[in-house]
Length: 476
Image (cartoon, rainbow, N blue to C red; front, side, top):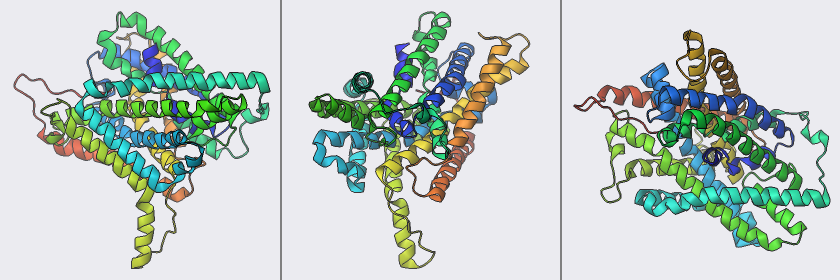
């Protein structure tokens, strides 16, 4: 159960959701009912039918074919190339609190934010290349620190509410007159509730998984839901809707601690949370890099991605590529449109776009939104597999009956499609609608098109060793 909570609960996404007000509490509850628990049924059913390693890659491959398996694993990896930079930016927003109140404005400084993100990205890449024997301590800090941060945040919220009450009213939980900014948060909420697919990797190490997993999923969902709802409510109590998407957690703790005479708490809390965020980024980098590594071995991608470091025995080529792509995404979002604007103005080739460089908050939201789309693609296959089993099998071969699989598959599939569609609506941090839509549609088509390119170009050169055993993608 705790394993699922660690995998699912993601404090980083809470501020961007809470910024849309109390209506997001209902969205959390809806997502838990229509997405999270169907996800649990899908994971248990598919892990039972296909117990081998591979997770979302293996499941989609077995049910829908090789390309769909590759696309599922590819999207699972590339979403992390987008998600890891958001973790770096979140680190920037939190870490400036360690420097003291006079330096909080640095989080909005484009040069400071981009430089700090790149330095941390390089450091975590090096730690993962050196290996888990050296870098695992920072991964552990990510899990421990997240729980402590959530406990402190919610604990302070309870104290503040009991002493001073709250300015939140019933009206804050109603659908706003202009709900377009709220729509984006539904996809982000679904993104925040993924993680149960980790069971596919751990299946061989769980004692009596058929009995253990259903209860663990149910209770893991309850605990994760309580933490998410509690953290969102606390931010609304402490800060209201004016939550900073990067600094919201520390912003709330600083405000609440100051109200009860515990101002000293802010700096150590920010330091602990910064280390926690770095640990989360390290864990996702190390885990997701195994996909292109084995894809290189399997000849679906360039074979040099399958190289192992001669000393540390880690997939250093895949880690370096992932670090470089994440770095380019950070730089592209901070500076790309600005340089295009200046170049076109100087050359006079096209009308100038008159776009300002994006701030850290806007870059965070754009990267997160595209990561949501790619992250949810494998879940289309998972829920589609349940519906397929329910419709084609007269006598179910797995753990659940046809009715359960059909209802869970239909609910999860429709919710996933809705989550993907709604994230194309811009969040309130977005300053240019058309550039956001270009980023979202262009980015989605680019990554899916790149998957097709790698599969059909390198797939033709796929080789199988003499024993007939092909490499298997191992999904974190």
